[in-house]
Image 1 (cartoon, helix red, strand yellow):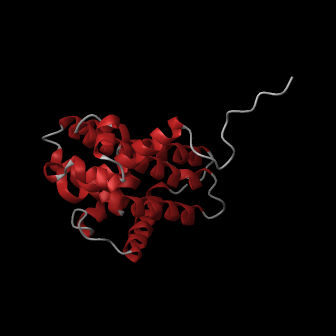
Image 2 (tube, rainbow, N blue to C red):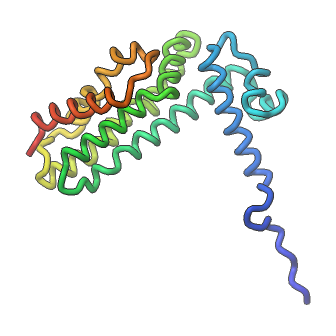
Image 3 (cartoon, rainbow, N blue to C red):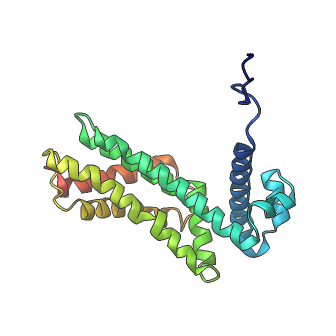
Length: 219
């Protein structure tokens, strides 16, 4: 009997319908965030979002039923992606090598870069501007906000303390203080996120934060 031909697409072939739907939804959410960040909620239109995403207007409604749902979903998708980047930035602290100070400074530099990038600044501005219209947006801060980064940072700090390389006996508190040293200066330097901060300044902030942190928590 002849073998039944496979129905799976060849490698590099056309995407499956499910994959195509996911890709379209991601494009819509990215386009929605870009339009909301540029125009604000009130002035953004679904037609603008469809054009930004490269899809037809009915496609937007098929995936996300209305403008309010678009806004909430775009904020959540963006906040989730930024949190994943921040958690990845902490990974070098699990294997810092011989020069802990240099690794800590590198992690700090990456965290302030992520805090200061255009997407993160736009996300904060949207949350500030629309929190009275969408009070549930505050849940995003709880789900994907700074305290999640603090807990991601506390784990390697605690491990380094157990290994005798730090004296952070309360690692969550130590992580909160390190994040405050890193993020605190940026609001003034960036003028609440409207002025791009040169990378040289970001490195200065990371170096100063690391030096201060190690004065308190060096083993």
